Every structure is written in C-alpha cells, then in structure tokens.
Image 1: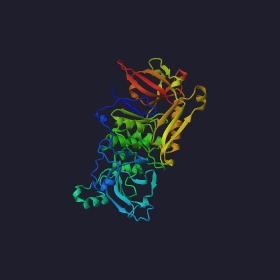
Image 2: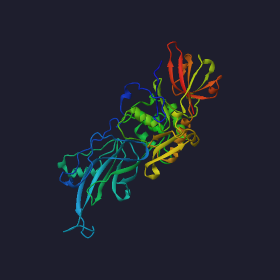
Image 3: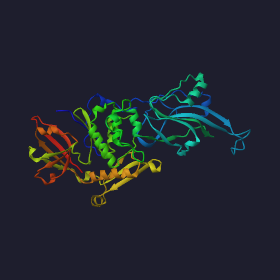
Image 4: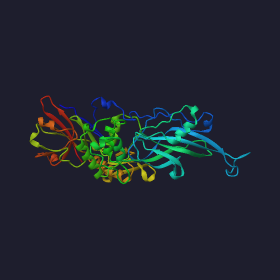
Length: 456
C-alpha cells in the first residue's frame, strides 16, 4: 500500500504524522539559508566612541513576510557618523563655552527575504516617523538589485576601511541617509510596516502561477490568502522546501484557496524563527484549519469543515460494503472547550496584541468554563479573528463521535482527510452524517480499517 502522510494545523490537529523523504529533514528558510552576513561598520573606532548601537550578529535569520504587517529589522550597516555643535542659545542649556553636540548617522536595516513591494510606515522608539521628513531608499529584495548609492559613496570616501559595496540580492532592506539622532548618540529601536502581495510572491516563484494560484490576490486590508502563503513555502527554491509544482495537486490547492477566500480567511503571517519545515507548515495550515496529505506522490490539500467538494474529497460509502458492525466512541465533555480565545495582532491599534473570545454561554453555565487559547499573530483584524473563533468553537463545543469501520479492498480508494457519508445506514448516528477519515490501516487479509470523526 502506498505511503500516506497527513499534516494538519496545530490549532485543532488530530492527524499529525511523520515525514517522507529526505526533503522533510530540511529547516525552512532562511529560514533555510538566507542569513544576514553584515559587512564591517564604515565608522572608525574613534568616531563611533559616542554611538550606541546593538551590534549586528552573523547567523540571524531573515524573516519571511506575507501580506501587510509590522515587523522588526536587523541593522546590517551603519556609517557616516558625525556630530556638530549647536548654538548655545538654541539648545536651552548648551553649557560653558558654546553649544551642545548633536549627532547624525546613516544606517541600513534588513527587513525580510524575498520580494516585498512596499514600505508603508516606520516607527522609531514607538513614535511614527513621517517618511517625507527623512531621506531613505527602499530596496524591495529583487534578484538583480544593485548596491545602494549612499552606502557605496560612504565606502568610496573611506577606502582605508577596506569595505566593499554589497548588493544584498533577494534581501528587502531600507537605507536611511544621515538620520538625525538629536542630542542622543543612540539609535532607537525601529519597526516597519511592509506590504507583500501575491504579485510579489509570483515574481520570485513561478510555481505559484503553474499551480493556478496567482489569481488569489490579497483582500482590501492587504492580507493574503493563506493557501498562497503555504504554496510559496512548499515550493520556493531558496527559502522554502523547493518542491516542484508537479509535486502539489493543483486542483485541491485551488479549491481550498477558493474556499478560504469565500470565507474571508486572509492573514499576514511572518516566519521569523529557525524552526523545522513541518513547524512552519503546521502554523500556516492553522489559518484555515487545513489538512495536508502526501499521497500518490503528490501533496493534496483539504480543510476541515469546508463544504463537500464532490470532485475532490467527498464520497458516499454503501453500508453493505462494511464487513463488521462499526465501533463508536465519544470523548468526555470535559475534554471539549466551550470558550475559544484568539490572540492576534490588531492592525487598527498599531499591531498591538489583542484577544477576541467566543463563548458558548449555555454550556459554560451548565458545566463551567473550559477555555482554549490560541495565538495566531498573522491574523490582523477583528473580523477575521471572529470568523476563526466561531468556526473553532462550533467544532469544539459539541463532542464529535469517532467511528471505526472495517471495509473490503475498496478501502484503497480512500485517503486520510477524505470526507465521506454513509448510505443505507441502519444506525441513526450515521444517517446523513459526514465523517472525516483520520486513518486507514491495511489489514493482512487485504481488508481496510477506517477511523473517522464526525465532521462539524
């Protein structure tokens, strides 16, 4: 029998398996390989004696960004540090013998790997920066971008430093010319709001177009379809798993992307830690309660509680095909949460953490509060947070039953993740009920044992 792997999102996952092949031993990124290797500072030790900055470190991962979100960055270059003395009367306390020194410095901050189309906002120490008041260059992370002109000029003017201008291909970064530090000699902490669209992803990954996912654009808020994000991670040749488009089942990926868009499930996730590929995949699946199957040599996509897709994963099973009476089981009510709280990044409040909670008040009143808290920072609006918590609460608050059934050789037709119904059932519990297959076990005699959970 063929090997079948099932991976689900970490939110409500009950079908997590091992990984086929050596490819799954990779870690994602650069989260596989795109690390920051900053050049030496363009400032001599004497000049930077008064400059306070968190030194960049080799080996820091470059984050992968999707949609519209606020992110931190990593300083990869600084130079042109200089000071000048202000008039004593203008500073309100310049001291004896003249004014007080103010400082300026140029710097570059790496933001993400891959093409990022737009810089929207910038904050310094928590205060919003008017981009019209500063001189900066935004490099979107294209393969053919050239070295920054401002940095190249500073390096050329200081040949004794032995530096070389770097183009930083595939790195999205911003260069700020002569930032005014005021009377402080310390750079503040910077954060940035950027926007990466489906078109940006497509420009660096032809597999998205081959799969027919290039038409699934972001919503009015700038958030992306999570299926596009997952497909990019699976197929990107540099920071992803590097699978070919032929290794993904285009039909199922398109249909689940259509379902996610129709239900308004858009997100702006950031992959900013050096975790395993499976960890990042499970995280992205959580935004649409997805199920990823590896079967017949390709990856197929499903989503729990999505409508039956007659040409994809929905099958009627004839009761007469069963070889034995089914075995039913049901978890204890104590194992089922009746309140789901989602922690997300609220864009309307500068991406500060917010919590949206859905509660079944009747069930809480009967048996007390059983809370399930979930963190998905890629959710950025209360509307999407409410949609997700509503779906999860409906699935969790009522205990689903599990059924184990024995079937003949036709069991080879099915896969974990398939949605089935039973025709001609003599048991009321199965009449018209949809079941999601969890596992399929081939028996020595050629029969199959299917375990499925009631779909809500």
